Amino acid sequence: MSDRATRHEVGDSREASATRCIAALAFLNFVVVTSEFSVVGMLPAMAADLGISVQSSAYFVSVFAVSASLLGPVLSFYAQALEPRFFLLAAASGYVVSNGVIALWPDFHVILFMRAIQGALLPAVVGVSAALALRLAGAQRDAWAISRLNVGVVAVSIIGIPLCAQIAQGLRWSYSLALLAALAAVAAFALSKVVVREDRPIERLSGSALKAVLNQNFQLHLLVSFLVFSALFCAYSYITILLGDVLGAEDKWLASLLLIFGLSGVIGNNLAGRYAGHSLVATSFTVLALLAGAVSAIVLVQANILVLLVIVIAWGAAHSAAFVVTQLRMFREGKGAATVAMALNIASCNLGIATGAAVGAWSFEAFGPDGLLTATLGFLSVGAGLYSVVLTQRVLPNSLQPD
Image (cartoon, one colour):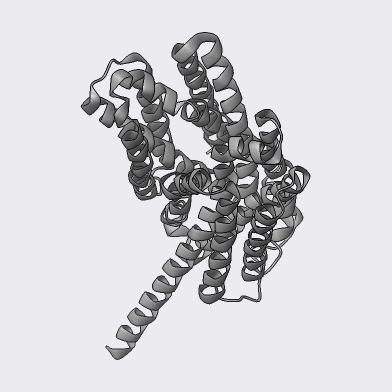
């Protein structure tokens, strides 16, 4: 009896330790993703302070995305061979230094260089964090681990971006970067306390690991991620304008609806973590359908505030859930090379974010909300269709095998 109790206590202790570690990893993810997106709301202030045009300041966003897409997977391939605690502390320190340098040395070329470093680190941070979280949680709880880790990303739109924008407007934009440097230092300290040093890396560098993410099926999954995130940010980039058009004279509700959108992400994140582990395919198609319905309703339905509230909750939940199902899908597809698989997925998603925002801007300027809806539904339809084809290709060879 006492041995059974002891084993139970050891199990509880390990689960509590894993939970603390994943929480620290989620906080680091919060810092690095906030570092990426918070700059968007500060571009006018940065341009005025640096004496450059707003168009030129947009390079601070694009250089991050390009670096994440091109350099991130390469860095991740080598990061997987490092001891995870060492890499995570080094990466957190990189964000301390880069954000600190931008805050203290606000020069156009210096900022570009620091943003390129941050972009290269982000996919590796997300990949190593996910691989470590999945190792701690176990294969049977992979969806739970991804959803808990994604809490950090959900918090970006609720806390990170609004807080940085408020500081930039009330004080100076450089203070926001100083805050992010301080938060990165807090993340490094937390990780040093809860992440146990191991003698083994996350994954061993091998030809089979590279082969796992270079096969045709995996590349098609990356294209699905690209299309889904293009759809997400084609619509999300114009959420303020879309809600403003529906609200009309009642635009006093706009700030509240945006906050509710962010908070709804917590619901979507938790539901995706609960159901995707049991049925990833069904959950994925449900999320895409919910997203298509919500965006269509925003554009086509003349809703009162209560109906609009329901639509915004559905949209916010689907938006966040898409992150979870996409990451889980890529992790399972690239098993054996989880770090590189997740990094390639982040790179593909970043390309999707940039493409979706650009196509959304063009379609909205050319055809208004109807054009934006058409572009969003186009990305979603092609993404869902390609996902169906990929699933069919996986099943078909097995069905053709002789008995």
